[in-house]
Amino acid sequence: MSWKIYLLSGLFSIFFGFQALAGFTPTHFNLLKEIVEINSASENTAGSRKVREILQPHFLKLGFQEKRIPLEGGHELWVMDFPGEKVELLLIGHLDTVFPATSAFQKLQVYPDRLVGPGVIDMKGGIVLILQALEELKDKNLLKKVRIIFNDDEELGSLYSKEAIHREALGVKRGLVFEPGRPGGAWVTSQSGMYWFEMVVHGKASHAGQAPEKGVNACVDLSHKIVEVVKLMRLDRGFSISPDVIQGGTKTNIVCDTASVKVDSRYRNPQDLKALKKRIKQLAQTSFVRNESREGSTTEVNILNDLPAMTLASTRELFQEAQTVGKKMGMRVVGEHAGYGSDANHLAPTGMSLLVGLGPWGDGMHTESETLELRAYDERLEWLKEYLKVLLK
Image: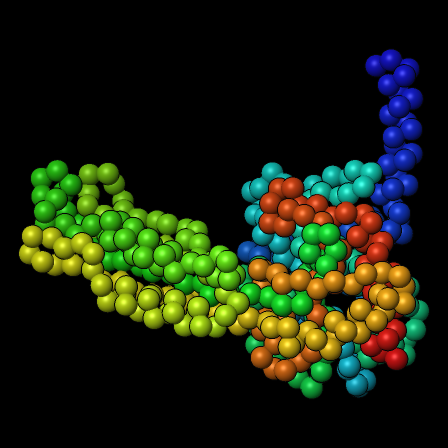
């Protein structure tokens, strides 16, 4: 390597290091790197436990006391507050990510203007943001009004933790959810509802060459049903239907006797969900394939997740206050709809005032290009400290 390349490399490192720490203290930057590089896929409860152990002393140092609520499958709900104090605000986050332990995407990559890594915005960046903001507030009278809730199954739809979250939210009127902001920096003021379901079709096996006419091909029947379901999709009004996992059959020389599909649907209008449920019921009672004896298929439907939509009514109050704080700081606060779900969807039916997307933003959620923009961390941190002062005054 020539001396010129060494010089350029050194200059880049100096610039690079300064930029990487621009919004973080060295402690918080190193903390984010450490927890991002611990795999905490929703199924990897040991990984989430390790993340909790690393974060724990930082929160307890602020005076919080913790309790860990054991849940099914080794999951836990982690709750921190000041016992005996009146809680006025929930800060809600999750420790799990979508990246399996087998994924090659396990390290934090650092660039002058951004960080790339698994869960860096969804939502380990939001977790560190909460910690740094609370530390820099330096006002225990404000912290005493806060309850922090972190689960480790949010990417599964909070299947195991949602009831415990509801219990911990009882009597609290406001909640902030630290999912990432929208690309470009908008806050999230409404969220789609989610309805995940599975269709399992049972047919009849037979030799594919000797007696195909005696079989009832579950794979073919399911294919028709998938096409029929997807016909309901209306992306122009935020109604998506995505068959994401399809399985069927055992061998190429046996007529497929069992086939299944797992479907992710998202909606904004409850009438679309109603129409979908009606069509699913009709399809479950229909066989598109029959054999020579007129035997047909049977279909069972399993509901995997049912998450209500969060509407603008749930966020109106807190968003208006967010805008007021932003205006005082010379910052434009904009709200957008998000197609993803969060724990706010579970809490919205309680009537709680909510705001989502308070975490730093970037791009590439749930992909191996998940990115946190460094300026996003800076802006969110300074705004959040002022916002918490207003909400907790």
